[in-house]
Length: 178
Length: 178
Image (tube, rainbow over all chains, first blue to last red; front, top):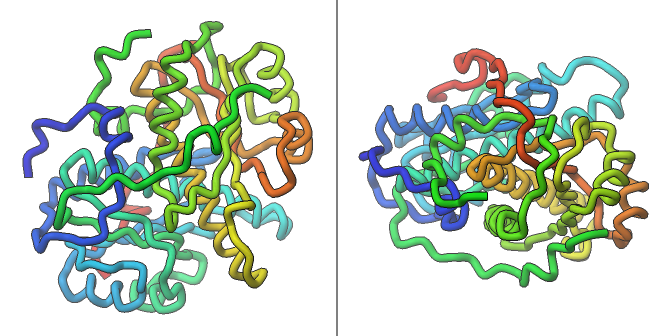
């Protein structure tokens, strides 16, 4: 996979779109490294980095994750399982811990978006999947009880050209001024 | 502000860092349009777009938002208030609605990350702030009860060069394989 011509950031932000069907093409180690580097550069509240990620790449393990994640439709070259690491939340009152956990989930989502943008920049694609069997994934991936999967992200070479999703009129969702 | 030389996406992903102190420089309309365009191109679960955003740009209104958001430290040129729009969640059982809301919050976080990346690509900076007075913001911004602020994002020209945050050893947060 060539990394020589990475498009500019605004183009990548504007043209990313969900990819759910994948060509049967592996993703090489160097590309995985670039994806991970971009992902881990995401914002982290209080720099707590209360996150944990599992990269699933072998054919059998990808199949096993798919069996637990009905939101993964195609057969991706790899799956990133993005988790909140409750071991980094710290102790405190239950409402305070819940609040920190809620914010940690937002950071995991931002890391996943970085991952998806890096994938798109490198000619790959994917989508965030929130429909999966948490307990099953925890057993399959041997995650400790404090680590909770938040998003499952299938990634690979798109099987077909990206389609831009139809969006609401910006005037409905953005307001300028008080 | 020049938009002629937007850096490549991987560089922008890798070099973004939190900006909390801002130079007293306004952000022009064309730049705001580019930021908004990138933000609204974020993934949205089931393409529901259960989000709402308020752009706060005048000096007095930025001050008013700051007074309600202790996490906003410097004086930014603008503030984006990113909200979940409960009016798009749909009706259903309470647990189902909670689940859709939780996922909508992740989409809002991804939109905020797009916003921060676009800002960085254009020589601006910002950071996601989760410490604010929700009820106060709702009154100030005249938000309907179903619209709930999730993140407040100060944005502007960085007052000083970015500092890379110290991150955990990747081996602590990434696992390869099952």
